[in-house]
Length: 434
Image (cartoon, rainbow, N blue to C red; front, side):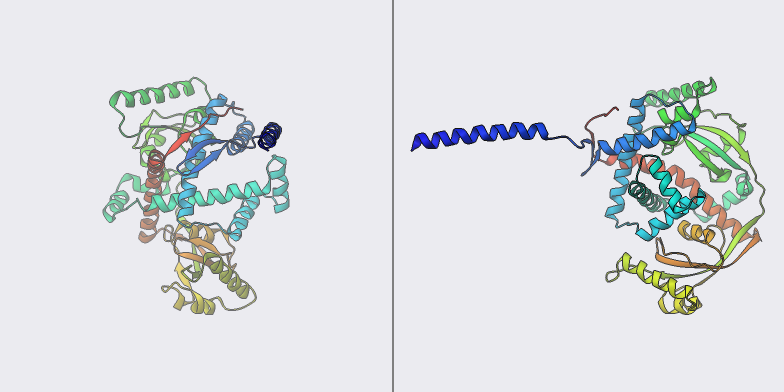
């Protein structure tokens, strides 16, 4: 009996060993972790997808790509930063509804003069899928809300600061030209000694010398910059001169087209700025909107999806002929405007949050917008009139305050991103090369 039990045990062991060998031969590693970010991970497949996108952008721009290991490092650091911010957004309850996402994709297609069908075909032609693109756009929208929510609360503009700006020569930048600039940031983390700071400055000077000797500025940005625009060649795009960070303005004013600044020091590090184009300036009229809205706020008994559904129903009722003002009085949760039928009066630049002003500027007269989210809740919005108005004292102050916030935002964003990166637990598991 013992002999039989022993034989059965041995046979079982042989069968298990054979099964294990067979199973091992069939197992394939589908993905692997390349970085641990707090309690989350970055996967190799994410790095590969982002690399494919970046190389396609570089090829389209005609720029010579830097060494592959540098691009991989840039992509991995960007994904780590994004993962930290996305997790902050999820923890804060930030969600992008399908309605918002569809509207955003429709705007992208429209801005490229494409129908949705043509846009989908273009996406598939790049080797991607519409579901991947939707997820990327959804994440970008969450990132923007996280950044605005976290950074804006750190920014304060006092009345004295505003008065000083308006009374200074900078105040005249309200009518300043538009500039198209490129940017390279070499960060200086806190705690660096003088020798280490000087070494970073020398590196910035070396990059300037390379650019002046013919090396493409965008290639240098991709390979060296720590700014969020690095993988786009450091392009900041067209901006009003007054919207640039304060440390940039004086340098850009002195630059000729295609000239690069000397290294500029800020709290974030050392910067190089290249001026590609300059145009316009001197505008004396601004566009104003006469708008009204209905606000619905999510709460303990009404989630965001319900709020959006309720506003969508109200929008359809208005489109069917019901009176906007009466519905606003009945349903809007904005006590400052509901009794006036949702009317907000004539707008001035900087009066409303960015989501509100973007919607006001993008819809047609008497069109009712799709539901959109701001820090106050969910809205639908209608613009009943538009006009061009000369600057008044109030308009000037509102615009100046908005520009000062924007200027501080650019500087504070980089400091905040460095802070959350320094405070996070990040373990790089593997530097994957393709």
